[in-house]
Amino acid sequence: MPPRPPPMATSIAKRTFSTTTTLQKGPDSARGAMFAWLSGPGAVFKQPTGEPQYITSYDRSTWERKDKARNPDAFVQPYPFNRFFKSQPVLSDAFRDEIYNRVKRQGHSVRQVSAALSVSIERVAAVVRLKQVEKEHLAKGGKLSTFLTTALNQMLPVVDLPASATGRGGGGGGAGGGGAFENIQELPIHSLAGRQVFVPTSESREFTRADAGKEFGLPPADVMVPHPDLVTLAKERFESVPLHERIARQEERDRLEKSWREAEKVRADERKRQKKVLEVGRWKWCLKEAETGKVGFRYGFPLPDRKKGHVKIPTHVS
Amino acid sequence: MVVKIRLARFGRRHAPIYNIVVAQARSAQTNRPIEVIGTYNPIPVPPVDGIGKGTKHIELDTARAKYWLGTGAQPSDPVWRLLSMFGLLEPKWSLARLQSKVGKSAVKPKEPRNVEDVTKSIQGNIGVGEPGATAKNA
Image (cartoon, rainbow over all chains, first blue to last red; front, side):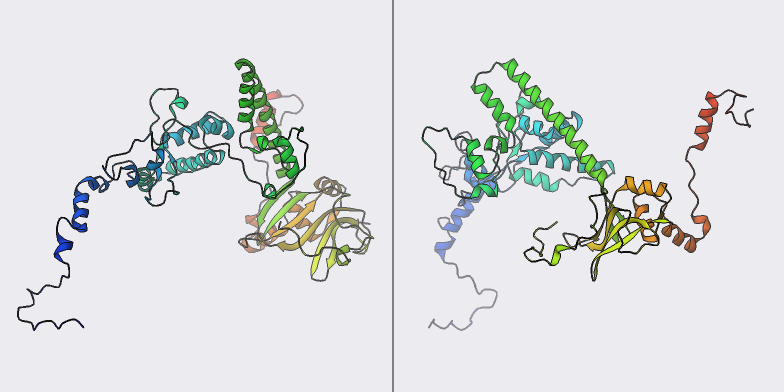
């Protein structure tokens, strides 16, 4: 049992409530060390400097910034104890403008821009869509609230347009430092590829990715990849096909893709023409073009919907 | 006998589904028609996400429908409604409803938009006094 406090002799103002001992208070204590650090090397963390200031990017003994070229990982790790969490880089505004210009003004395809700038197809498409929304909003006289973007740009590595893309020197900078923004050739994992397959083959047989794809019932990885053209280009380079020949082949491939896309557009228009959705009154009306002789219930044939052996519950969601 | 474009009911109890048929007016609903030109499902398919309006599906061979209308086949009222949605007929019942509500002035017969331009261009090409020139110019 603790001793009873002495009877109150002094006035209430003089009485001390602090339980801190002298050891916890002095300049050599942990608390003192913390304040010393805060006013010393820790002062850089007090105010944002305009770029990410992760504590991991500092040497913990000397409190000097690490070499970015030698420890690139230290500059994208915001949580010191979680080395698996990496800050994902973001595109700078100039970069996004360039993507928008190439797609909308210069008429390049999303795939071409993605390959040229090393940004994934989905990201290019998203940038174009959001830029369009932004421009329409501005045209209507709206205002942009850039507070969050500015704050995020100070906390995340921002990648500028690569110098090679602009055709001018300089630029670069950011975390990317002129390298690829992201891996654009990521192979989508199809659920069919998840199963285990044992295929006995002779040792003399050449078993390629195309054969593997066939076993899984999928196209080969070289085709499934977002940019199969880049694979072909790399192969041609490896086979040391002369440059002008490679350019000619690529132009031919581009032409084929363009014609295919135009044909696809025609097909889509045809589908649209055949199917129209109106919204009248309480319902949506799906109007579809049909062909006499194929459409409708036939006379003299009963509906087989009560017959044995038929699956009567719906097997798919339309 | 009159040829009609009408609906023929199929499906079970509480689950109707119709063929859009061309048939003699006096023939029974279940008789074999002259031609089946489409189907109409009056039961709306609920939206996939559960939000918004349900969808009613109509399938129609518009070319055959146009042909039968051209021969003078008489659409029944429900079929008139469906065909007007395809733009093959002037909507009848919505207009009638509008007229009864607002008055006859609300619904005016359609006039070609640029009648004057057409007359002018015709008159520009045809000299005064030639056959085809209007009496006004002569």
